[in-house]
Length: 478
Image (tube, rainbow, N blue to C red):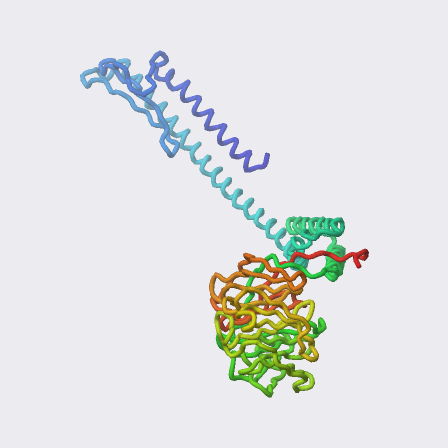
């Protein structure tokens, strides 16, 4: 037992002994061994004529003894035996009071000592906790970087779980990620249990293997849209921004085209970071004004609809000139068959994993959507599909893996409502909601390299993440 606890134990024992002595010895001192008090401390039929009697004894909050007595009537003689007994009682009570006062002083002194020791112990405990926290802080930064890396990998798991083939490989990846996540969580709780460099190499190895696995993915079916992520706020309510899905990994140029008409200026940025900061790398003055916001950059060239016409233009950024132009036969233009928001959005040019596409409407198809696959060099229509969905009832549309997905509105509450597969020439009604954060969408296009939707949302340039149902190609697939 530590010294403070020994002190406290001695104090408690001493007080218990005094209390016991008072209860047993005090009545005998005053000749009251046979006197009984009720449980309510009330005196039962004691007559003042019998002389001085102890009524009750107690201890106040400060630890002092309090005795209550009943005095005899005043006509008794002061020199009788009762008077002498009273003087003896008073002397002994005074002696007891002095002893208790001394004990009280010692108790107060010991109590202050205990309080002091308690404060010192708390301070020592706080110092040990600070030392432990400082030790953890030294390593937390490194392990937090690993945890963030793991957080980036974890969203891949729900997608991989849906694959119908190569289940054993996916299960192995999932187990390794769970193991590493458990290790990282344990390290956060108790720093230093594992070697940082070894763990870092395991994460990098797993990331490489997952990326190799992702390269085997064939085209997928849209299952979910999440976001958006607001990249920048700029321009008017209507416009377009995009990257090239066929560009190399080191080429992250961004192109920016504000407004849906009466403009010919395209702004280029070397990266997303430059786009956010507004650091332009180059501007292009196109030979023609564009119509709408449904342009696309594909393999280094810009494809857009020439203003007040159904002519498609191919413009090379590297050469700074038009490489091809062709009329899209029977396609409505200049707000004949636009999307629900108008803005000369009759002809929508887009690209996916398969190639270059044009989405529009014709009188021959009763104003319903027509999908045409284009030759990226000559702009010639290679094949077309007539759908039964009215173009004027569509908010926006985009292609993923040869399937056209159509939204039912450009306003709040919009969702992907209809899809048409060019592979099977069939359609289905869908119900895939997405968050229209800024209430008005005037451009929505899929980028196959980023596997994301680029959108112009009421003067905000945003990105939506997409979840696709994939099939993994194996070496046995032909």
